[in-house]
Amino acid sequence: MATPTSYDLAQLTSQFAIVGDFVSGQPYGSGHINDTFAIEVNQGGKAIRYVLQRINHNIFKNPDGLMQNVARVCRHAQAKLKSENRPDASRRALTLLPTRQGQDWLVD
Image (cartoon, rainbow, N blue to C red; front, side, top):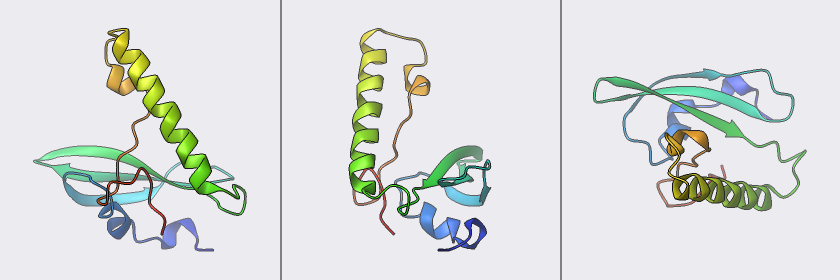
């Protein structure tokens, strides 16, 4: 298993439908189960920050099933907030950014 610093974050970022040019990325937080990275892209002169997370498949034996549940919960929370006309609804629930192939997660 690779160490968190050995991932090519620019290459991984390019696999997602993120608008902007990769600027930087580094490990984020100190989790014990997953690897988490904060990345920054330049979007028309504005720095935009995203969080990438690698699921530890040694702990989560069915990562596809896990991500299906995560996607379902995210969509439900977003729909509920939107139906309630909550301010900043898009910022109150996680949003999964699709891969360039339209998937909710990337398998590398």
